[in-house]
Image (cartoon, rainbow, N blue to C red):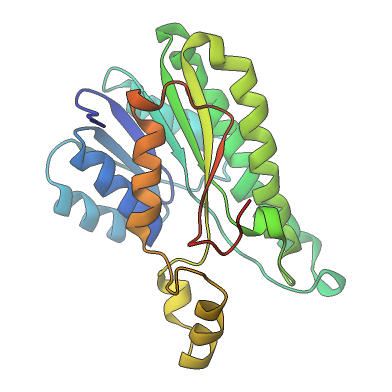
Length: 244
């Protein structure tokens, strides 16, 4: 079950906690993983940890030229079967004070890049009549969050993008889905003090923050052959924080 042997998977934002976990889990299931991100040192460390069946691509997903570079690196291995659009940034601030450049940076990285990468990946997937695209959204794309108008809008946009692409390519054996994490143990949440962590945890029925692996195993399912009849779906991984 969930055997990805012989498949090639590309994961953006792999230099971060969730992206790294996704790469490890897909690699553990047998895939060759193309790990992409902006921090070469972190990517090289992950590649060394994984050993074989890994390719490193350094770049910024917001660069319009990057999708062709990433997909080209995967296609050089013979094919790109799985694309995980995980890269994302935050530029938080109240809407009344949010600068245009902070709005645009988040939209460019979190939404536009996912569209461009998907468009580039779909060419080969359509020819081969097989593919899996998994977009990493967020619970705030459904619930909203004060101070994150740009981030919430981008993540909500990912859900719409997921559904539209899914409808376009389902007849070609390609699925497009979204995983929407809640609060997850990452470098960002590690900066929370005890009182902040307690307030967050009290809102979560599971009474804990998620782990990057919780997200990664959801991605593994959606990337697998066993999920061939699931498309256009958003899988919420949030411990019950938002039951939608």
